[in-house]
Length: 63
Image 1 (cartoon, rainbow, N blue to C red):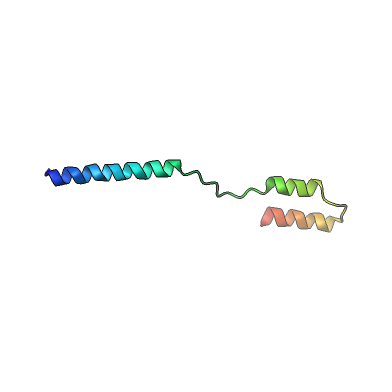
Image 2 (cartoon, rainbow, N blue to C red):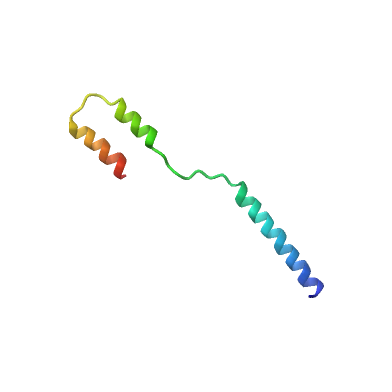
C-alpha cells in the first residue's frame, strides 16, 4: 500500500469514530406517551354518560 492509501484509511477510521461518538451521544426521545394523561382524564372526569366514556376510550386507544 502506498502512503496515500494508509492516510486515507486512517482518515476513514477517524471519521467513522466521530460518527459513532455522535450517534452514541444523541439522546432522542421521540416516543409520545399519553398513558398518564389518559389515566388522569379517566380517573378525574366529570360525571357523564357511558357515551362520554366510550369517546375517551375510543379516542385514547385508537388515535
